[in-house]
Length: 340
Image (cartoon, rainbow, N blue to C red; front, side):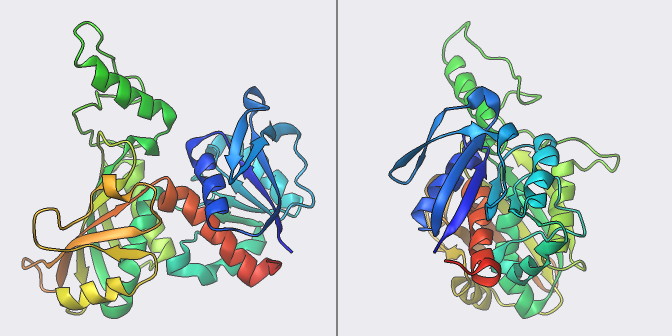
């Protein structure tokens, strides 16, 4: 016996990946519904070897459905997630709306799967920010061994994190730069993204941090440990898919780089590719379509007493969004719903 599953926002990048991953991982589905806004009504989407026609989110009745995977913006989620939850359908939300709500668990299954049992307060579970998800997967096993005191992270985030319009803007600007008179002015981003990097993701706060940088700190504390200090600089780069992070970690206790490498190799959701030679590391191109969080360039930081540096790469549409949501659904199936 399987589950009745709803994918909300099925025509978007993340919704598309949710459907793919549900099929790839053979999630026990008895019935599935693909929902979208009225303007996308009837659009066909793939689910394994099946083709689904999207239904109107505004008219959909969530009664009797087990799990709803939400991949729409916060404004729409604010309207429809409570409606689904009130109908008895457990919502797994990919937006930022509920991440900081103390009554809503924020889950990365490799890190804090036990927190899923707190879903019942609102019948909603939050998915973290894409850049946070891969970071905490890499930090968790090291924190268990040596207790992390402080993290300094610089991100190199692909345009797919902004959505399809951003992907199109990078593509069009890149082509336009080669054809005189066909240059494409920035619309999605405040500066040209082709052949450029932009040290600005989300809105600026009074502190000088951007909201993306604040998210990484707040979410790491909620998911992993409130005592960890996190400072981040988040940068948009001209890459279509795949977020990269340069991570500096300060521990309470000494952790040798070789031991750290061994720990990470044995940890769930992580693939270590760390050879000290040309190409002995992972870049975003290699991670696209993969489930793993890849870790490379593991080495001591000699400038502090107990420090390590590492490089972390993941497919942001998968582990950073869709895969993590499906993994949460799997945990719900194993620990709460117990049908599959």
